Image (cartoon, rainbow, N blue to C red; front, side):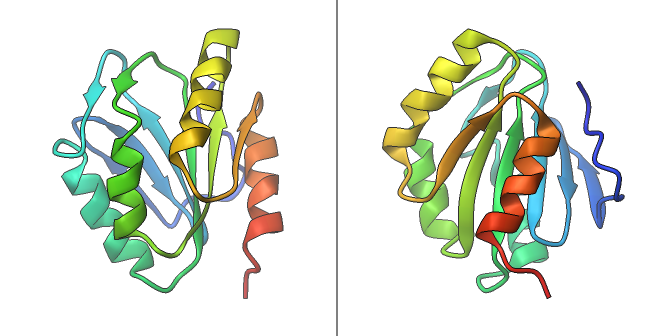
Length: 133
């Protein structure tokens, strides 16, 4: 299920690792099938995040897991340091294995984290975490 949010993103970026939809207070990631996501190959994404949100604009990261890929959950520690303004982390999972992996990820995050089965529900959750202008 691709991104179906009715409002267009502020910016859409297609990188080697996936597609990223940057909105005012959240970003939706759709990592490509088979990618081994590392802190190093996510460096361009991190730069884009800094460009869009800086250190002050509050935002939520939504991982829309439409594809199967792998990553090291301890990388969350590094990205948390880069983004003191991230207010939450949502995983949209489409199967039970993905949901169990998302549950494991919670132990590596010190921010509110939730698993959803619909992208629209994750987007609604953003409003509970971030007060928009």
